[in-house]
Image (cartoon, rainbow, N blue to C red; front, side, top):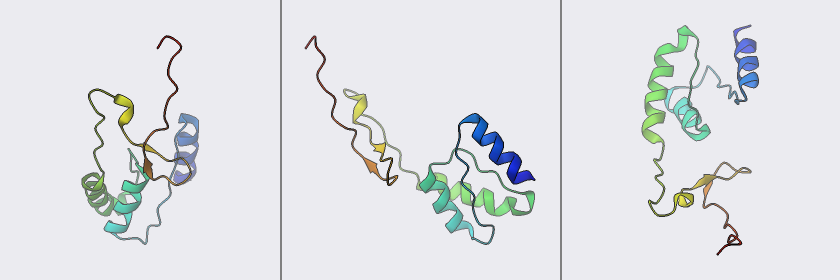
Length: 97
């Protein structure tokens, strides 16, 4: 019932829920959390220690992309089909240029 509640709340908020197998160990959970770009990790209290360790490890694995000061659009964006980071598509010049 708790999973269903979390799933419905995420859907209503427009978020994605990424379920993680409770048999995985810290580094495996951390990889999933970092790769998914998760901002929140919800875990049952029975798995609290593993969840905290995985969240800490995932935070240290995340790349910090900082856009160029002259061109904010130069920051990498996730590729929607693979989740890989790729440069943004080129933009057409405006009519006033």
